Amino acid sequence: MSGEQYLGEKIDIFCHIIPPKYKEAIFKKATGSSFYLSNTHRVPALTSLDVRFRVMDQYEGLRQVLNLGAPPLEHVLAPEDAAEVARIANDEMAELVNRYPDRFVAAVACLPYNDLDAAVQELERALGGLGLRGIQIFSSINGKPLDRPEFLAIYERMVHYDLPILIHPARDYTTPDYPDESHSRYDLFRIFAWPFETTLAMSRLVFSGIMEQCPAIKFIAHHCGAMLPFFAGRVPKVPTAESQGGDLMRLSRPPLDYFKKFYADTNVDGNAAALNCGH
Image 1 (cartoon, rainbow, N blue to C red):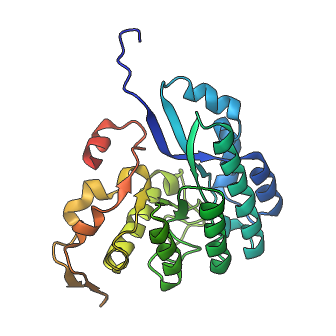
Image 2 (cartoon, rainbow, N blue to C red):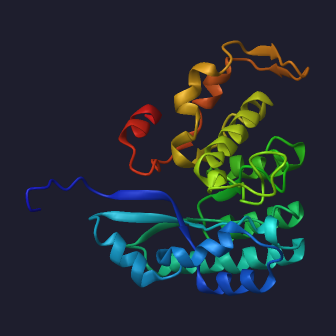
């Protein structure tokens, strides 16, 4: 090993991909602009297996869990188109796992969250039929928080399957950082607003009682738990509290107990101190 000890298999659990049929379909049907669509060509490994495999070969024992690269389907597609494109993407990812089991451990399904009946149907098809091993959800669904009752059916099905829900931040550059501007400047929506978005989504799932209502649910928070590891000391210490806006948080245990139920990946862009904080 040239003086370097082999540490065994390493699994990237939150690895994006843009398979070709999905790429063709979403570019054909998408409406409006999106950072995610314009960014696709800047990262060749998203679309080229040759490039991806060359990168993977630099790290012995590396395997990946595939999940669809953004944008959220519901951000750029009509409901009927989102359902169709989700099927295309999930079929392709399942095929990649079957074709390259030495490269890909599993894949995670995307769902058309702007049609929840179709989303549940695709969840059943992808997990029960294709053998995918989880689902991806974004930190908000077209502006709706993840603790809305309408999403409970998704969570209940994931508890049934005992498989994880991967939370990815959803904010685009079209959301300004300040009310009197038209868009986010200097990529701040991605650099700093993404961790905030993820932390906000985690907090709503905790404070609303979803994590208590579904005690066996498994969430994986992208970017090593976002802001939570650094700001855990700001989380309320008591299980029942009323906010300044009158919203009542009524839990059986202190909120941090529920935050500790989240899983996290290790994606901190090489920042060892941040990784240690997350640990």
